[in-house]
Length: 167
Image 1 (cartoon, rainbow, N blue to C red):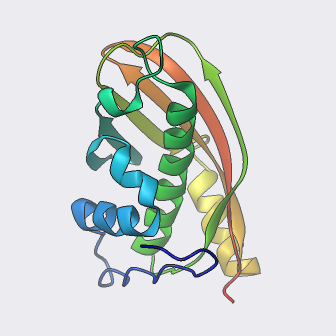
Image 2: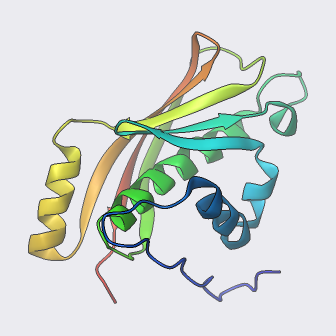
Image 3: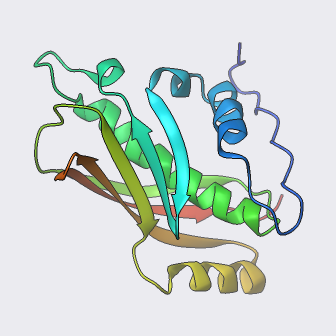
């Protein structure tokens, strides 16, 4: 069980030029953030520059039998954190990432299992973050998360994620 106020040990960085094994990262994440084990994440994968989660609806139901907005919001925010953290780890950075700003727009009820896709808001975002990390030792990136239930876009979220300076 995690202790309040005690940081969870970092996961070792992947070998240079390698990426994290998705299932191993998710297992570490469930230890680091206990609620992750209850989110219904079935799979995590990269599709090009987008990070995708496949999720079960059942653990995220509300009183109406559809997706609970609070759970969905937490998932979009956490997926953005994962995108940023994994992007950094692929480049050999072990840094703290925090969400600086987040917003959501609910478009349709979530009525079945779903997927969330996270990508940089602009094509230049990753290059700009890399430049800021090199020049300032810290940086920020804007990401977009889209939640799809089948072919229906149910939720679109935007988040700014700050990469803290090494400390």
